[in-house]
Length: 77
Image 1 (cartoon, rainbow, N blue to C red):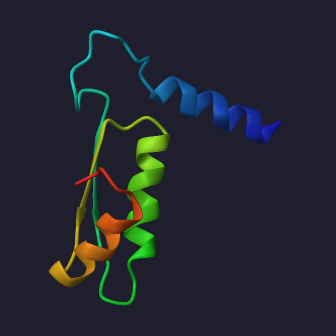
Image 2 (cartoon, rainbow, N blue to C red; image 1 turned 135 degrees about the vertical axis):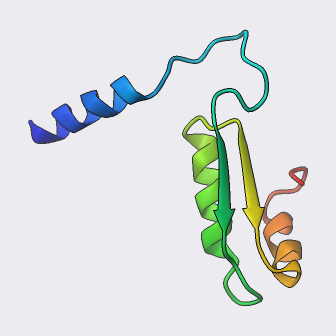
């Protein structure tokens, strides 16, 4: 039952979405991380934020990691 209470509290924190919102009004996330060898964590963190309702997700990383992170999701720059 503790889990249900936690979920209810989280639902109270998340504002309802509205069709009248503009891009970014339902949340923006900035993920900082990544390197030549470690590109998965920033990608999965930002993509998860989008899946959970954030409107925009930015990844700040080394230029050499940007190519790999961008290649995971074609069409997203």
